[in-house]
Length: 99
Image 1 (cartoon, helix red, strand yellow):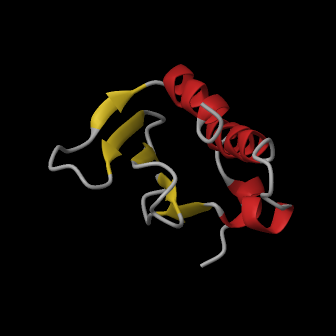
Image 2 (image 1 turned 90 degrees about the vertical axis):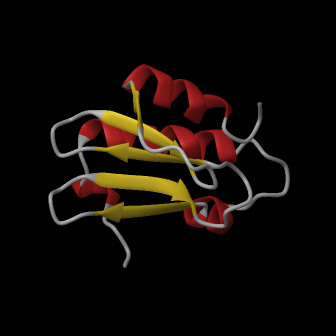
């Protein structure tokens, strides 16, 4: 399902835009690829989950809950969700692909 990014909460839109801006700095990645990098899913409660669409560029799964909290978990780890902050998510977004 294609999610209309403009309908998502402000913090989520900012996070997605920051990840995409960082991806645009990677040599050889065209705009079409940048637009497909993220898997964005909205659950029935209004929470949003954001992960790597290709499962090879980053292993974190970010969740913005209906209540406005950020959580993160490892895609391949056994641990569950850990509390995260918007500032931490934005820090990750700024270096996601470029270090």
